[in-house]
Image 1 (cartoon, helix red, strand yellow):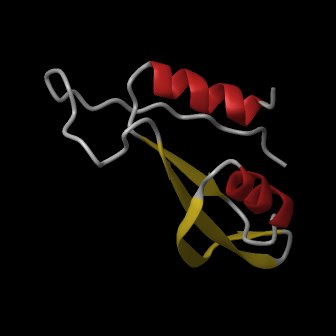
Image 2 (cartoon, helix red, strand yellow):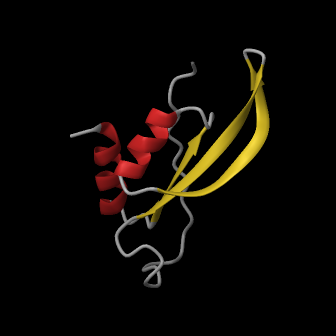
Length: 90
């Protein structure tokens, strides 16, 4: 099982409704393809928001519903949770 699949399964089991991917370079075609294969869809691009190694970088936003996603009202008290998964710099 790939790490992303485990992360999606765990987040779904915990009742999260959406997973957001923030990819720090639009040239990371492999990362974008891996997220797309895992069911994420492109929702936006911030253009030229970073500068590294003498070039401007775009940030790509992708999103994937978990469980019922937004098709049903949340259960419980409506708490908001934030989980951040950062890949190593490089």
